[in-house]
Image (cartoon, rainbow, N blue to C red; front, side):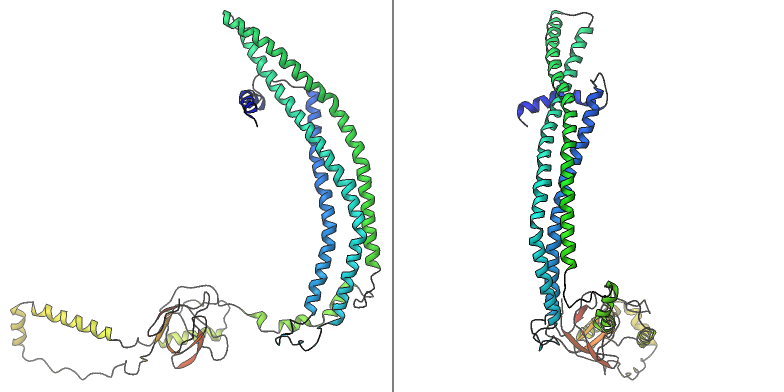
Length: 440
């Protein structure tokens, strides 16, 4: 919008607000209002006609392209997996020669059908989509005319209101007389401009509606017959397909069941299709039964876990830090005892000599594992024979560490030895590994 147009929009804004909320005097023409409503419907439906015909054109082309890509996908599935040793049919030159040949024949038929339908689709674009574009161009020009008529109406109402205010003023000065004379001339100009656009649209909009009906009738008829040609060609070509790979004597459901056989039952017997993850991350537990980390565990797993928890966790390994802490606490206690005063010493002497200390008991740490250990933050249930199950809070003796945290580690727990993942997503994490690098 130019600067001049912006200035006019600012001047018309108050009158536009009054017209929107029906304040003051606003010009209303019932004939034009009805014509303008019909024009809005014509504008909406023409845009819809253009969009839907374009979608139909793209849909037919897309359907044929998808049929070709579908055939290519099936053909690739029938072939062995790049001759790798993981494919049981890698020694066979082609996994399903009949199926691959049927896919190639089907692709050839669809490409021929695409070439046959190309002229029909081109006619749809020329006789339906292109005329709809031309009609939209005409409607856009008419829409500009209606906007111009609305602006002239706002100017007419605004100048008429100004002139009426000056005319109704009881005592007029010389300045008011000059302003009233100027407003009267502006009202005359605004009236002429508004009447021109208003009469022009009232006269020619009905003609446009009549021409629009004349335009739609052949357009719809052409689209109908071209659509019949497309469907007839599709039906005739697909009906004449004679690919020996397909048994057309049976119904669709029966042929599908015969071809599939017991493949679904065989797939269900594979272990990998029933694999379940161990669930999300859970906070560590250092006592109590608690709930299972994975829902749906068997009763044997529940009883085994509870029996393991009842045995208790083994004590932490011996560390020099423990003795240093004990020595530090004992020395501080002796310092406090020496600082209590002479009265405590005299009372101790009156009681006589202290009894000899008892014989030391066998230490529980004598047989404890002194190698590297790790504390599990989450539960892990053995997934196969040779795996080690444990609960959150268990201290595991590390016997063999993997090269990285993503490999399998070996360890002992309560006399049982097995393997477990060094780190799996939302399943196991290590808080501390003494003597080993901590996985992150």
